[in-house]
Image (cartoon, rainbow over all chains, first blue to last red; front, side):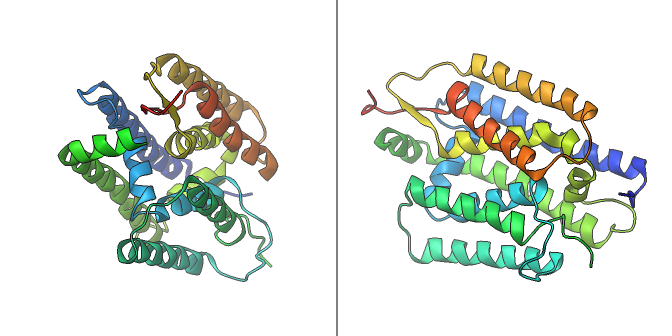
Length: 132
Length: 139
């Protein structure tokens, strides 16, 4: 498949992505080394997901499915732009529900959301749809 | 898990600061991606397009993200926290191996292989580099 951008453009954005990856790792290392033991971002994200922010596993699953999986057939006929809009809308709905009806979410429920997100990223927000 | 809840309650101010820093990092990534997709779409690819261009080269990221998701949602409760450093190095070694392999393997690997890499990252993190959580009830 032909690239539509110059190699230089890809390189610049790759550096931006690596910058964020390194920033996250440095942040995580700092949290591991500071005076508190249980304050890593993993624990903060888990606690947030179990309470109001239960959209987090869904969003992470969708991003993973979008980046690394991706069906070739667009079974639902939803375009890329609408898939992103729908994803934001679903996350906002879940966020609203989280604040409206606060409850502790089980590991099974979070796993289900993670898998649904992955399926969403694969079947609805795919980058691999064949042009017809 | 009650130990963790007590910890969160006791250190609410620090936790809030960490949350804020994470929100800033994630929000900055989203804003940059939106700017790339809307205002600079003729000149620069989005983050997704960079990965799509050669997924095989980014296999290490799939493995790493699989591992991080496993660390977030499938942690291990222990009575005494263990050091994570050896697991961390083992995980980084596999990431480096995948980055090297990614440069050698063909660009168009099947989706099943990418899924396997992602799941392997999760499994390896769970087995060798789990997020230990102190829990008095753990045996």
